[in-house]
Image 1 (cartoon, rainbow, N blue to C red):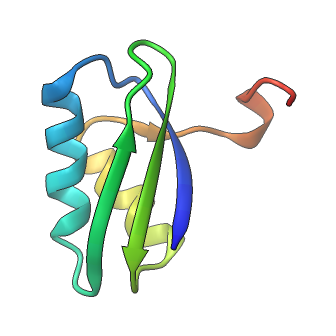
Image 2 (cartoon, rainbow, N blue to C red):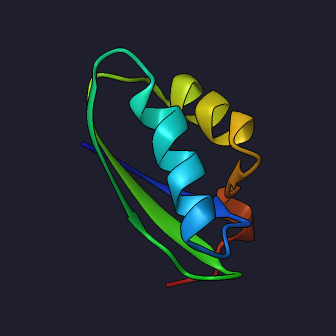
Length: 74
């Protein structure tokens, strides 16, 4: 299981687009998305996929993996 921070998602349609692209990757068995409208959403992927595949799928859906430097400090 891997977790990613994704920026730019604002609604259920955004969630559907990201989920559809990621589940299209061979080896992915599940995708959970915690939407933070207009903020940084959390995307958890189960199965076999590498970071480059996930980033490409998120980009194809029209969104971006957050740069760790852009995230607020915990």
